[in-house]
Image 1 (tube, rainbow, N blue to C red):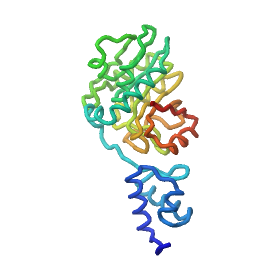
Image 2 (cartoon, rainbow, N blue to C red):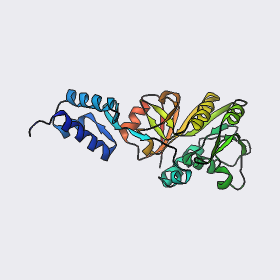
Image 3 (cartoon, one colour):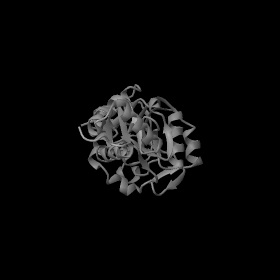
Image 4 (cartoon, one colour):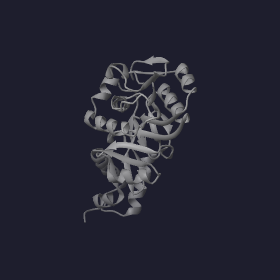
Length: 258
């Protein structure tokens, strides 16, 4: 065993480890730093207070901030294969007779592309990609209206919120930019957060979040739901086993697209 590390050295090593792995178990950090569980916990508490990470049961995840809404075209270029299979799996959860809310975003757009052809499925969305991705919808489609948001290729604002207030859905399938145990589900802009929160309020059934593994541990600007407010998370197999376990402890069913 070498010379014990001082606190600053330990915390730097923890940050370096999370920079590579995004998630760390306490037991692994104990081995890395050659120190006790109590010392690791104190270091994690200090780093969490500084905003570098978020503590979880048995470890920590890197606190990734999503400060602005990325352009829609930039979004669709990230993890396209994962988003495609997530969209396919989430769309398979839609059944005949469902009334479904679907919000903006590249993963939600993949859900729209894969909805089963059935005239007894009704979809309300603010996702403008539907106009270019689907030549002729094979389900009942309602655009909720509102002010066009060019960066997210979506609709939002008072008109959109008022229209959502006229209907109830029995399912909501929602894309988010960040999901964490402490901060829940978050999105980058206030207009989109208002739409998503209204969709959740008007859903008398399952709230389903679609998010690839890179969204875990990320925190964007505006919260839309706590973890225990959602029923299902549809993600890809890049999500760690520890993350699945921690999310499951909130009675959220984690569905992994293969």
